Length: 111
Image (cartoon, one colour):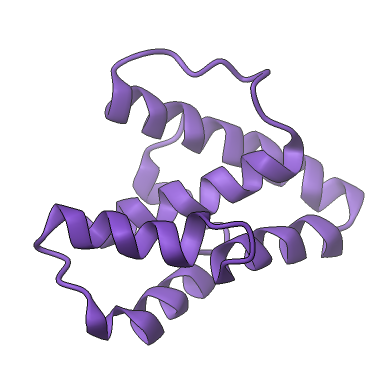
C-alpha cells in the first residue's frame, strides 16, 4: 500500500475547496473541522460530493479503474488510522468510494 502523502488524485481541487471556504472556520478546533468537512465534503450536494461525481463521470475506463485502486488503498489506510480496524471494501459503491476518498483526503490535508 502507498503512504497517504503519495496519493495525489484530485488534491489540487480539494485544496482549492479548502482554501476558498475556510475563512469562517478555526482548523485548530476539532468541532470546526468536523463542521467544515461535513458541509463542504460530506453532505449530498456539497462541493466535494460534486467533485467526486464529476471525477466519477468524466474519466475514461482505464483512468477510472487505475484510480479506483489508488482510492481504495487510500481509504484503507485512512480508515485504519482513524478507527484502528480494517476497512470492509464491500460497503461502498464506486461513487461512494470516491466521495469517501474526497472527504478523507480533505480531512488529511487539513490536519
